[in-house]
Image 1 (tube, rainbow, N blue to C red):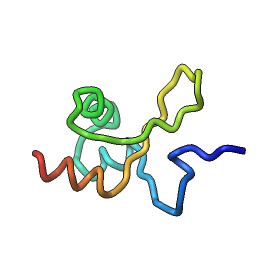
Image 2 (tube, helix red, strand yellow):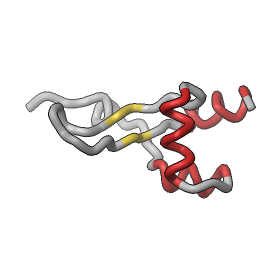
Image 3 (cartoon, helix red, strand yellow):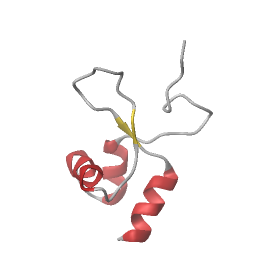
Image 4 (cartoon, helix red, strand yellow):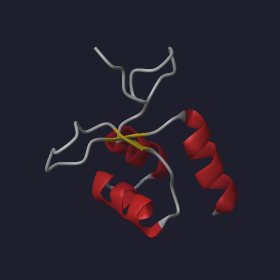
Length: 68
């Protein structure tokens, strides 16, 4: 069984909902930030899936905050 970037190592990933709560915005806004290139993350959806499953590290969040 192959592991994805989402399961690699013991790194904790945060959902768009959690990131939104921290930033004071909705999860939909977090996804907009990703699509605009302002926030980086990992799409954990299985290949061929129609729905994205974004996950973020604390480093992704800190990098985003530093750029704001």
